[in-house]
Length: 200
Image 1 (cartoon, rainbow, N blue to C red):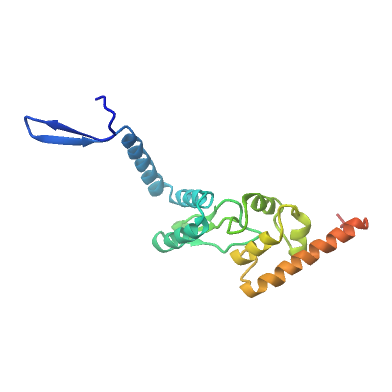
Image 2: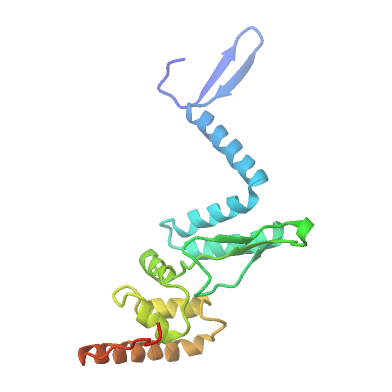
């Protein structure tokens, strides 16, 4: 049926019945809906991680708040355990650390949240992941790229809970510690002094 319209009502005069149909997009939507439902039912853990990935990587302003809401919903409705955010264990992507396996007494799937959070961009998250693990703040400062991992990134990590359960009041203190270490490293580099492990 050729038409400029997007929706049609095909009317049969004999039976006085009509069928409402739509443009070709409806077939694609049906296929996408079926595929999504299949993945959610059969690959639940991967589906959850994918949805959270898409959410935090979208261009919407409130993407991290939306991801947190999804996490709460999955925790409540789908019996998923979200592990703590951790500077040494979180990756750029959400990761499945343990799968639900009742035979081995694992009652819930355990998912580790992404490093991405408010104030921490993709480049910084990749740089942090690339050099994991970190022993302490000095190790973080020495291993990461100073042009990418700056005070805003450290503040975001503290507020996001990646440096343990630090109180918001401690943010300023931790950022100052970061700046002091970075300044000390720059000063010693200018003097030609470098720290080295003589036993490795």
